[in-house]
Image 1: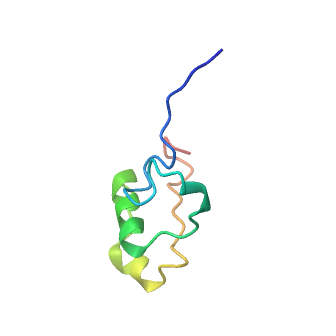
Image 2: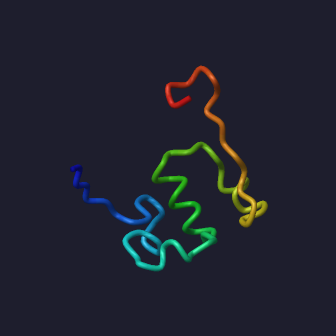
Length: 68
């Protein structure tokens, strides 16, 4: 048996994290999206996010990165 204490929506910001409605919430606001980006340190500028908040850009760290 493995028991794990988790937080639903961890890292998605204060409007999503630890709320029962997390699975029903489909879209992040622009401010939530910026907070998520900052929390995960994703190098996407504010201008790129503001260009189309409903279709944020994809980020690929590169095939030589440790994450990949």
